[in-house]
Length: 265
Ligand code: COA
Image (cartoon, rainbow, N blue to C red; front, side):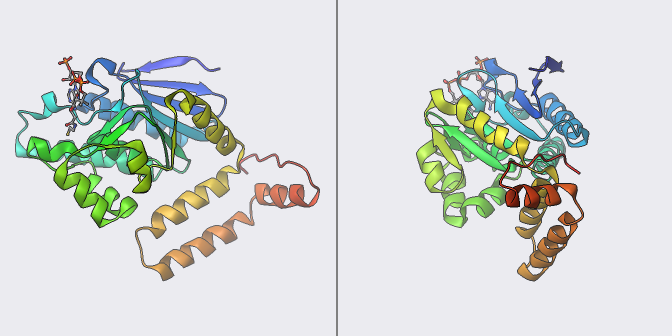
């Protein structure tokens, strides 16, 4: 196991082999995202993008109660429109950084994922929730709307009916309903969350990194363009992988009836 490192206290980074866990660490504020925490998360994901020893990331919140209970309401309360805009852009930049990371990020939703917390989870590539988690976009109750990409990602992930229900009514939903909406991939009993996350992260850490990257790029870009453009992008990514050692290794290992050893080359 790697060592825990403290980045400006609000974000913890921990390595276990090729699996990096990033933890929002303000448990007494239910891991609410203030400007300092957004900046620390941005730095953590920038560093992970450039570190070839990291093959997969897990993003979670400290403590038993919350993933992230939203943007920091105390910090937002007195912002001017100009500062509010900056705060929104900083949040959107972070979410986009995570979404476009060239390696998979799994959200470990261990409790409340509200407002900016759900937006953070939706920027990840896979979402696994404890059955006790509650998810929602309650900004309407504050006289606000989601500002870190929630209106757009919820729409794309779950469709207009779900996006409007969550954002207009503001009421949190439980993990099972979130799964029905397609917002989370898997729901497991709270006590099984770590084992589930570990199994998924371990599988991803053994997969071919260039193929993971190609998958992420094709799916994320494809969700944002016309199908013919997406298909061209897919073919280009597919073709590029024929230049990788890992593709030769993966196909040979299949034919030789053995497990492949992928190196990211
Ligand atoms: N921003 C700032 N502080 C927050 C916060 C947020 N989004 N969410 C929780 N906290 C703080 C509370 O103010 C409280 O701090 P205090 O102990 O210094 O008073 C602490 O975290 C614990 O929260 P509390 O409300 O006492 O816990 P609870 O179990 O009674 O309720 C929630 C849990 C999640 C239902 C409730 O905290 C909540 O509604 N949070 C805001 C959710 C929200 O609207 N998010 C969107 C923001 S845009």
